[in-house]
Amino acid sequence: MYKTVFKISKMDCPSEEQLIRMKLEEVRDIVHMDFDISNRQLIIYHEGDYKNIFKRLESLNLDTSIVESIPAEDVSNVADNLIYERKLLWQVLGINFFFFVLEIFTGFISNSMGLVADSFDMLADSIVYSLALFAVGKVAALKKSIAKSAGYFQLILGLMGVVEVLRRFFGLSEVPVFQTMIIISILALIANSLSLYLLQKSKSKDAHMQASMIFTSNDVIANLGVIVAGVLVYFTNSKYPDLIVGLIVFSIVLRGAFKIIELSK
Image (cartoon, one colour):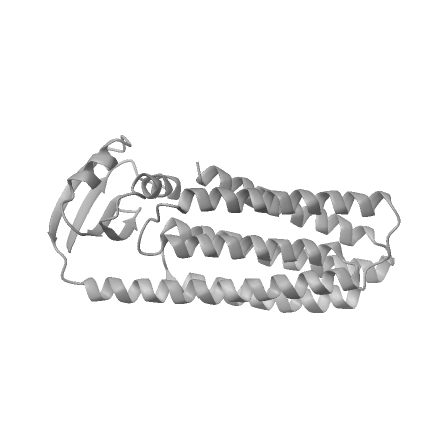
């Protein structure tokens, strides 16, 4: 195995990192990639020659040059990091999927579209974490098609949610149970805060990990919104605070879907 360091002068944000990942996704000799955006360097652990990798990087016109290519001596550290990232992503995936099931169940029982919307947001994050697992340590050949399918699935969920909110807004529907809204949202807030802590603890600068942190941060905001809606339902005895927050959260789900679809192109 070899360790090749590339200098990529025009790589200055995560969008270039994602572009590079997509470009190198079919190079099966690649074992692991470390992106150092601040220093504009890319370290690749790979089997065989680096010429095919260099050729693909050059085609992006990001001013790529080779710093060094040497036999890899710290492969064990790379393997340990990959195992740690996978374990971390499985943990946050499990947390999010559990709360997706909990929130969609309690959301329909309590007649809260805020909880249902937040459950869809949890499901969307589960999709993001699943995609991130594909990106750990290698660039999977099927990553783009899987990402695109997941993005369109999330888009359909978001549109269905918006339609249901509008139906309830203009039609007859019961006032949601504010106690369930507040209690479940507080539990979800704790879970998302834990997920965010775990992701930040990794200190990873890779695009797939950074994306996971952004989506989880949005979840924390959504949880707070549902809690506020529950309080307003209590004081106003009205369904509208819940529906308004539900519409906002569904818009977050739709925005996330468009981001995933865009990255899959």
